Amino acid sequence: MKLDKQKLTLWERYLTHEIGIEFKACLYFFAILFFYCVYRMINGVFNADMIHMAEMILACYIIGYIQVFLFNNFDEADKLGGREYAGIAVCTCLYGLVSFFGNWFDRSIFVSLILAAYILFTYFCVFLIYRSKRRIDDKKLNEELKLFQTEHKKSE
Amino acid sequence: MRIDIQKTDTGEESIVIRYHEPNPLVDRIAGILRNEGNVIWGRLDDVSVAVKTDDILYLESVEDKVFAYTLDKVVRLDGSLNTFMQSCDETFFRCSKSMVINVNRVTALKSLSSNRIDACMEGGEHILISRRYASEFRRMLKGER
View 1 (tube, rainbow over the protein chains, first blue to last red):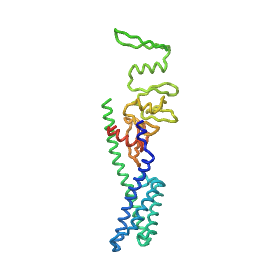
View 2: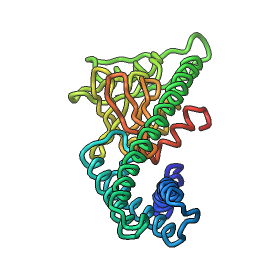
View 3: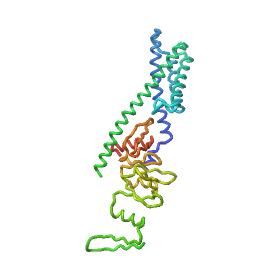
View 4: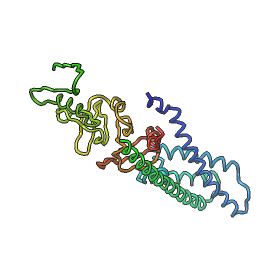
């Protein structure tokens, strides 16, 4: 009975995925926006185009869906395998293409390629961050496990 | 088998078992009377055997049959995982639809992506605690359950 109450509804499952993807979209949007702002400042422009920003957030959101549903959510994966590497390659290419055709960097193939390299680096960093987070969680879990086992053996 | 229950006002309370040949039922009754701790009964190669619940590493339900795994044997139990969960102590945890683990026999835990947990048992088996049950498991370890 208790488990039935705990069972996630379809809505809650959808919401869990949606929040994860929106969080991801925000993360990559800010990473790309930083790159975009640096590019603009280097070129002596000190404002950002709102259309470009809208395109960026939309691209991050759609690519977030692709990342989660087609490529095993590779940046949060336990380890990187073939499908994850394919995902990294496809999503990086998509960002490069959108940046080129969206005219974010004055249609410069060179800057779009640098953006692709930057995205690759970001993916790798995010993967390492999630892995470190899980390692810290491992320690916490095992400490709690030992405490639980000690307490239980005492009460026997 | 005939059962006689008699009230006595004097002397020590006692139970006498009479049998022609040793058999699983007699062993089972004797086991309960000897108070051999928390013991559950199951079948191993069509022979009724007793398993101490502390010795169980995990239980698995396969096609409506429940199996208890210890370090050296696999015993088929009567009933379902739900029935077992109603009678077992708090060291047993339902970690997925078809599995129950004995937390006291877990050697290490590993946090996985999507909030899942990998439990390494004493026998070296790895059992996955699904996302649905992982939050409850964390609460259990913290003593919040």
